[in-house]
Length: 123
Length: 106
Image 1: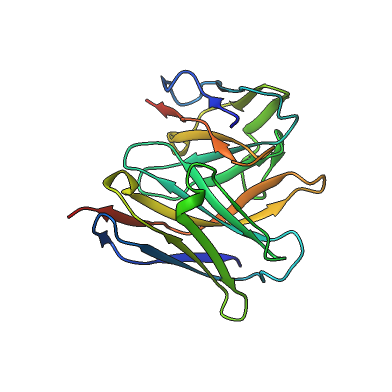
Image 2: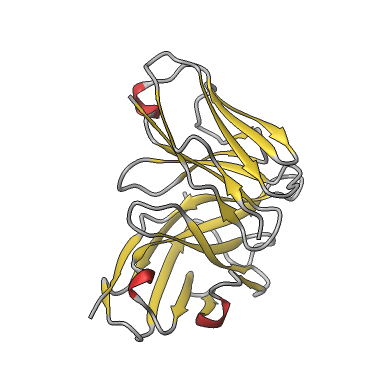
């Protein structure tokens, strides 16, 4: 059974760095085609994809956020860490991590999600 | 970036209704289209991958169709537990993008 759980601060001040950890079980981030992604959702708004790290340590980022994001994995601890620098109140959102896989014909999707963690950016 | 649009942003329906939820991509995304259901305060749930592949455990009243730029999620007979917001997502290119969602309510 695949599970993911996000942890991190609930309140961050503007200009600070936000660090979120995704701890997962039920799969390995060393398995081919597997990845873990981060997606956020501001209150009452739509989902926004942020970043993805793959089994082979390849990484992809949303171009609009690329300069502020870092994503790393520790496969031995079953954790993925997302770091976002210079946060702003507009970064207030629920942050989800999700398991990424692909269909038999190579189409990516997110099939298991964490419950999400609400992060508020405010002074 | 590929823009995903979903219109209407909300629709009202009754139990037993057949509901169709459209999604349009700004560029051709072939069949790289997934559908998610989200209920208030909950994480999104994958319903359908690659346009029409129903996920394990998802009721067969859900189905998907389309290719290229135009896609549809269909609920053949709406059930009380289906009242939620539905998002389409393209995974054809980076950045992966989600539509703004269609809320299905009573």
